[in-house]
Length: 559
Image (cartoon, rainbow, N blue to C red; front, side, top):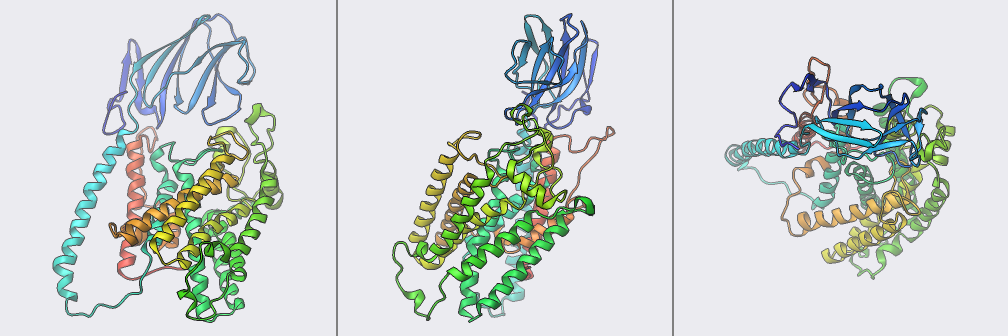
């Protein structure tokens, strides 16, 4: 594997004997494969299977010509199998009698490989070494670190020598103490969410996992909704202290939920009325916020007097305060668990349930929403399944349960004033969630009673991602609020305008200067990971700078 600072082979054409390969015809994560068939059988086929497709059959890709060669380009995400005397479209994974060989080689981006096929097996030769797709991470990191130093230097110079003279005679305005770790946490999640939505640089391990499992992008949304829950107790207690009635508070909750739901429809539903998507990210925010906050409204105790906060809490005070709410949340998650024991559909389990996607979850969403579900989930390309909405109705149940873990973190923050007590309890919750969630999925991707699954928002997914959330909040709290080793910047700025950041990045996706790409004469855009990563990091960085500007002008958008 060759190392380039840009994951491009540099050369346009590669010649091997009399064969010329046009390297610019390859896209990201693609390679050339030359198959030389020396088998006289007319039914020798190349079958392919996406590596993410679990318990799926191989699909016939092409028939190999008799005693001839054929050159094709393929994705590095595929597994290959060659079979002779088997001409069906789908080859079951456990079918071995007709298999000539499995191509188990680790084919890499922009590599060129030659495979000789005969009755005794397959023999692979590397004609051109692939490029290292991870080298652009270092290149892009250096570019943006250098850019950050320049920008930070300019800001520092302005504040130190110019702005200081302007404001040196003005009296500083006292500011209310704020727990910056909450904003920092929220900022980290929204920045990562923007990067994930912009494309993750094309890196498979960052993008959303196809079905079961957990990639980096899968952690972002649950952490974002978790931190929303952490802020709910503080918001309600503030309303309680102002003397607002439950009716007034509930109307404000309902109003905010409706706004979030409508914003979600506007941003993600498209314009085709036949396939208008009714549920999505902000819609789920709205539903979860409405239900979880309403439960807390009637379960949390109003402070009787100003001395309530001064009382020394007992060891289980934060759990007892939320106990009634936890009972309701557990009933909700039990009901959801009964529903989700399902099969995936499409190619899953050797095409046993072709028309089924997401089992009862998908069925209920389809029954209630019809065509108004997400049309292009990750499962469509890999499993050849039908449309399925990963933010559908049924998943809202465990999302409410998810929010309650965030609410628990917020109640702990409100009840205990000692840094040690707060951090210790968050870490204990993290350990408990991690062990229970890991136990449900047997600490594996595909096994266990309830695998980790974002599309179904499974209970194990809630617990495992809550483990990450508790841990991250504890870390941010120590660094930002306790030790003050870090100011939380630049994520602090993004966290204070998270909703605006989300709405803005959705509306500006595809518009210069936030988003850009280049296209060569072959019509190929985002051909390399370097270009994709540079573009996605740029778009994310633009919104971080916008959040900094909004912070400086003291503008904070709320719904």
